[in-house]
Length: 272
Ligand SMILES: [Zn+2]
Image (cartoon, rainbow, N blue to C red; front, top):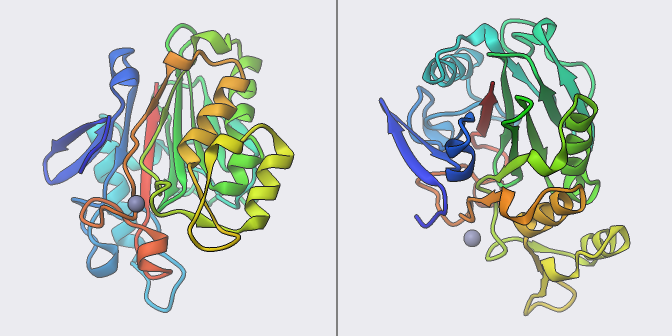
């Protein structure tokens, strides 16, 4: 597998770390599917039970979370899980949100981005082709985790995360971002409606390549999120990209486009 991130192994689990965030001291990783306790289409390090006719058990998912938290010296009750609904909404979370979605009920509204300045609160966003983005301000010690599918990307969720961090005192010039493993432009064919939605929202033309099939395009979601982050004030050299395709690398990643509904889901994690 080619990636610009570091591929790390701890116990049975493999995960990716951004060299940029790691050098700045960010406690973070992008889980791969390798490791954990789940089996079959959910094997092995799965972070959502799924919605198909075959699902993983809640017990497996929670054990996988416990394993993930432990790698950062934390426990299941320190995790805060987004409730993903393809929104562009980012919420600041604190001590009262410890265990949301693990040992406490889930959010009962769509929140695709989490921001915090609370130490040892472990933010989790999940994906299986969509884009996980982690943000870190080493100066003010504020971090964020974002789930950006194409709707969240075009809705500017990464910009919303930067503005939410700024409302807590971050200067966008200090913020570092890591755009994690997601479906690559090699595999992400979209239709005219997606192209129109993006080009009406901003200067995203460079993110699209016409596909050989009439009226279809290949979309580079990593580049699109980089643009949103730069428009929000991040320095170009403060943005790190995994540039590895989840659909192309079935050994390492779950992929909705490759596996369909019966599949596991990865998670990206960050904490202060
Ligand atoms: Zn691919």
